Image (cartoon, rainbow, N blue to C red; front, side):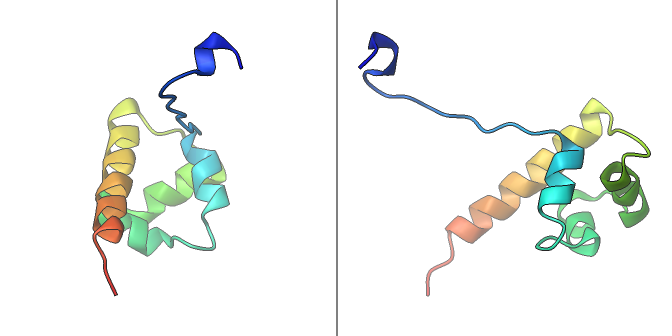
Length: 78
């Protein structure tokens, strides 16, 4: 095993906003994304279609909203 892989390793998965919106289109609606990000559906549609690219501030809002949702989902117990 390479020395680099010994011990704790953290893998970070990164993708652009367009790819994320395309990949999760059947799971996350624009309405739901609007609720968790505060970005209106029309603008999210522009990002999803490639008509425009989100500014760094908008990317951060999307990422923060998704992380909040993820934390909420991780706290659910049945």
